[in-house]
Length: 313
Image 1 (cartoon, rainbow, N blue to C red):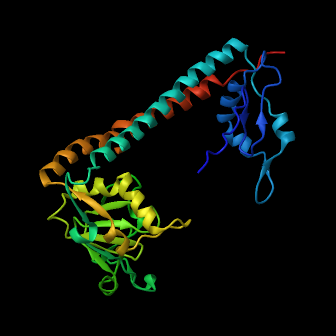
Image 2: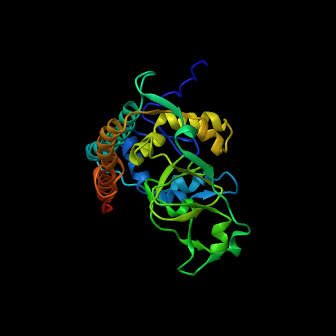
């Protein structure tokens, strides 16, 4: 496959959302990067300029009539320098997130012959969920109902399913697929291939796969990291086909070949990856907390730095 032609660099310019080029008329009066940061802080105002149905475009007369502050050029450049520093910090944090993913994948990659390899179907029981239909006939508010597990019940960065918004009747549960604490559920459509560990007994619909009876081959935490790794995710995607909407099924997952190192080696890998995972994904510590703090700090300073009193005429 040949290289795609690179987009030309527009020195001193930036593109608006609808691919118009914005540039300062007089770079000795208005720094384009300063203008960019000012617009970033006023996206709600810019959004009000958009008109039309389907593909919307901003009213250029309103854009041109927009009043912007023009402090001395040295002040503009100092503001740009400060805000660039925050932007670079955020980029560094995102780079560390990618670094973690690369390290995780390297720990979970083994040369042929170094460890035992097996298909998922040989080392685990994998089945599709089932949906009682029409589902609304089986939803219940009875607290003794069986938890009904849906994709919205788990956070995108979460690991465990601990509660559900809805429950189904005992009859509905009989027509569905029961999972128990410790079983894995794997999304087979939305959040394609994303694994979660059930912390409750509940039922899954046909948008999930259930993985159980793997204890003889895998530690649960090792299997969690393995299923999230790039090589396994890429194999899921390859086998599910290249369409816009990809769907896993039990046969696809059963056929994927995975490494099965000794349990003590799995425990060593888990101890390393759990620490990294907390740093990268825990909302109260590590990268997410740091990134959220940096974004809040950036927005505060951006708004303060770009707020000016109008000079008296």
